[in-house]
Length: 244
Image (tube, rainbow, N blue to C red; front, side):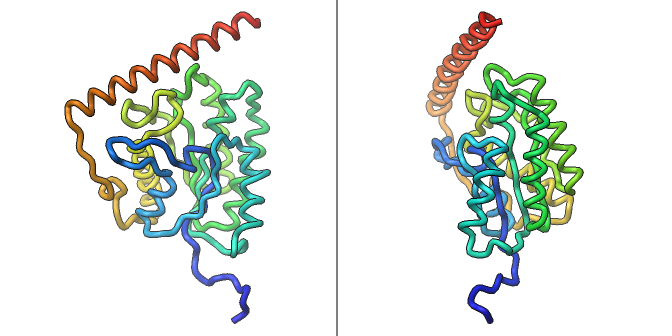
């Protein structure tokens, strides 16, 4: 066998995206904040290759993450059982949001994954996104995600209604540790309907307990952070109105 021959087997899960897919952050009742893509891979019994980076926009996937994969992978022409892409949350919250540009970049990224993965999973964004809210632009983002996913034959994980005090942080952008697990379990449900069944549920892999005191501390911390986010959002809105 040639030394540099590609492996015959699939290499697991390949993921691109932003901080939500990159994972990492503070504990939630002792549960580590890990990427939803990692929980999906663990549930499927597969390894994860993750090139997601904090703060990424769709252009970063195309211009940085995909080239990084091509440079660093020991098997750049190998295939994967599953490709995951969750991007757009940072794009749609920028002042220069451009739905056409996003569509072009998303199509390029998903097409790259389509060539290398047996299954492909794209993700829509929650409608209640950010503070100040991203608003109607999220509808445009999600419509583009569904359109391009249909073109390339990707499954869609619909997170439009994803929200909740214990699932999303006070910024209304980043999932909590339990939120990442909830996203993973929704993704696994989509995959199961397509014939890819998990060997274990992510929620069965964690254990935590809360007390009245820890819940109160958590509520106070959340309320304080939410107040800060809301005040900052109000200041941004006031500044934008003054600029008009």
